[in-house]
Amino acid sequence: MAASCGNCRRSPARPDRKVKCSGPCARAFHLLCADLNVSFWRAATAQVGLFWFCPGCRVELERKKDKASTTHSHSDVSDRIEKLERETGELPAEIWHKVFQALDGNQLRAIRMTCRGWNQIVGSSCSLMNKLVLRLPKDIIVDQYCGEVKLLAACESRYVHLVMDQLRIIRVDASWWASFALNLKSLSITGCRITVATLLTMLEPLHNLKSLTLASGPLIDARECPSVISFQLPSLEKLALQEADQGDLLDLFRQLCPRLKVFEMPTGSCAETHSDKVAQFVEATKGTLVELELPMLRRLWGSIMEIDGVRLRRVTLTGCIRGGMQENLVEMIKKYPDIQILQFPENSFLDKSILKTIANNLTNLEQLKIFTSDTSFLHEMPKLTSLDICCQSRFSSTRFDFSRYKNENLTSLTANAANLSRSLFYSCPNLQTCNLANCRPESWSDIFDPKMKLLRNLSLQSIKVSKNVDSLAECFERLQYLSISACDMKQSFLKALFSVCPALTHIWLERLDELDDEVMETIGRKLKNLKRITVRNCGMINQLSPQLFGECHPQIELQKVRKRNITEEYLSPTEYDGDDYDYNDYYYDSSESVAYF
Image 1 (spheres, rainbow, N blue to C red):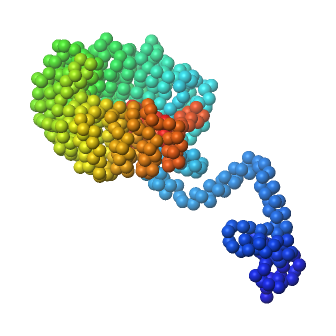
Image 2: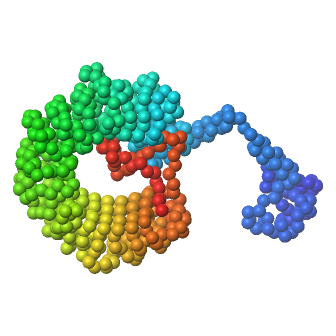
Image 3: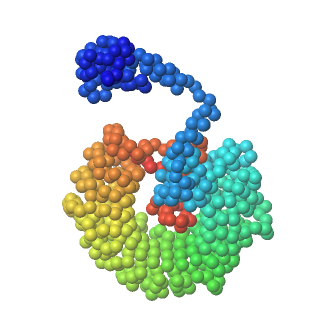
């Protein structure tokens, strides 16, 4: 039996000439009873998305709409949020933790803002928080009245890395700092006004601290530096003292660091005025010390080389190598034959005798940074995996032909002022990271050789080619980071380049005359994995580019976001690998996923 009309209660004479209510009642009505004509009926039955509601359902729906639009109490909203989180959080926290392990720091920041449950999972995990850096805002006064301090005291997240830059640290209350500092693995205090007493109060509870950077110079008040310290930092592996001018600080840290592996003091007058205390510090930590960064001073290194039992694996020299220091360098190289990483200061050109000494004595050398125009000694270093070489300075315009060098073990190359007469593939077939500046290849194919299958990071600055010919025909599947600055590249070449690099995630473009909207559109369409792009001083970019780019990559934010004055940064995925962390505060990536125009 046909359903009766919801209005007149009679069955429609023609079952096909009726309209059904789309509301809760779902009853059928005569067209006449519903005050509808045949034209509407035809449109309604054509299934084009039209809905019709009977008068009763209209009233009911309006009532529900009015009720939903009324103001809810805070507790009502909280109950709804908790109910929603329970419905969406059916998976155990352990499963979510494993899922989040595959994300980088930038993605974890977005996860923390999704819901409270996920925020608690990330915040309670040291391995996940190891990918984030907490940076306090500059120019605040840290005391018991500081708003940021009150916020940190109430925070339950287990932060692992903390950066304090250009603050005035007057008082640190142990009631909140002790619990907050329990999980800290790295602490950076730079440009802060602080007394030694306050500094010691901050350091005492840091039992798990592995990296400490202190760069405040004369801003540190060390007038009342205690001669005896009642505690130690048992886990500290790296200590960086920058702009160190006070020898009393060395006496203090000599008692704090029983297991130090890395000591860096690249700047400051302390190395020259208190070289004896620097040597005493090295002697106190010689059992574990393997990496050292100090100015190249004859008196300082003369005192250090008198200490027996020091086995250095990395030596970084800063400052300027003056005349008469060549003999000290030769002695140092012979004193520490286990050196694997050796870095010389900028514009310190070495003669052939020192280069030969390096090649003959440092047989385990893996990484070398040097300034020289003679590359013949490199053939005697087959174990090199990283090379940073420059032969040009404000005093010299000499260039070297890098094409004569060949090393299949080299994975990282930084070259300044080199001539490339053939493809890099023939010199370094297994390169993964390549940084070239002021180099002169014959054509772009010498750099963009499709045989370079392992290349992941490429940086080009002020590169001029003899033959500006476009020969790109194969994809660079692994290239993820590309930086191009002040290079003579045509528009057609730029479009082709970004078309054959589908895996790019980070791009830096600067001072490119022919970079225009068409190239930007190619970047937007072709690079689906892009996370960050920076474009600076490119004259042919107009206001349309950000709009076109935003349409292709809506996931990339076009501006930075600062919340509650405390910025939570992330570590770049290229700097973070698993549970191991490179304790170098310079490698913090302080940006979000941003496109700059």
